[in-house]
Image 1 (cartoon, rainbow, N blue to C red):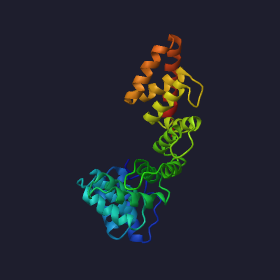
Image 2 (cartoon, rainbow, N blue to C red; image 1 turned 180 degrees about the vertical axis):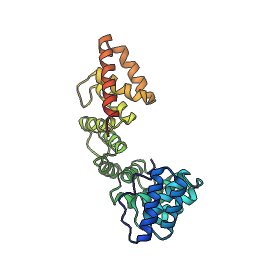
Image 3 (cartoon, rainbow, N blue to C red; image 1 turned 135 degrees about the vertical axis):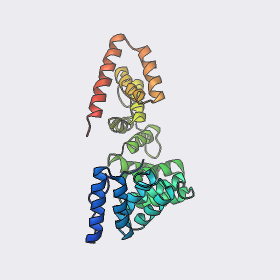
Image 4 (cartoon, one colour; image 1 turned 120 degrees about the horizontal axis):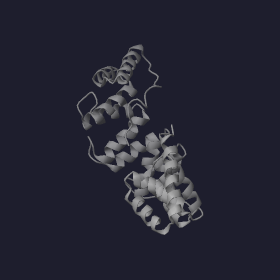
Amino acid sequence: MRIWLAAICMTATLPFAAEASNFEEGLEAIQRGDFPAAALWFRMAAEQGDAPAQFNLGVMHENGRGVPQSDAEAVAWYRRAAEQGDADAQNNLGLMHEDGRGVPQSDAEAVAWYRRAAEQGVAKAQFNLGAMHDNGSGVPQNDAKAVAWYRRAAEQGDADAQNNLGLMHEDGRGVPQNDAKAVAWYRRAAEQGVAKAQFNLGVMHANGRGVPQDFVQGYAWADLAAAQGHVGGREARDWLREQMTRDQVAEARRLSRDLHARITARP
């Protein structure tokens, strides 16, 4: 997951009037959709040392918006911002190291940058750091540390962390095994539209784990996952349909439509 321009820089506080002017001009150009002009304004602020402008310029180079796509340039600007303490730049620099884009691939470097961002409260960095502990990438595999970082991200609303925390509770990894807690975390992620969490929640309902067994609920959540291309969701839905009456299937389809409408209406 990458961090995009408009979401990160509106609250920046700039110490010099010239930097503020250049940075704000860049923001206005973004709002107009004039990415080349935005890149010019951000570069002027970035070269004067403004970290948010450096971060935004990194994003533009990473995605080829207003400038030629260049992972190496993205890394260079992320690094300048990250070394000034910009947490979003630290997270993105971690991603570049993990993926080996613009720098040699290094899980250890990724972990180091994720940790700096995570400790500043960036939910996606907390999730990324949890995943590194979960997989033993760049650090020794440690379920308890994975759970701790997933929880910090999940409590901030990160849907991927919520799903993974559900998995940890379901499997009893790093926490006592608890199907009810697994269901609660899967539900929070599923209601944000995460297909794998919708599938997981559907399976829990179908098997009566952590909730009373309910094929209608199981079908509805599996159907939502299937609609997003989740293969397991399609297979679970189709299997459940064979176990259900025609009326139950009709009820499940209505529930699926209602859930979809509720999820897509979320701000």
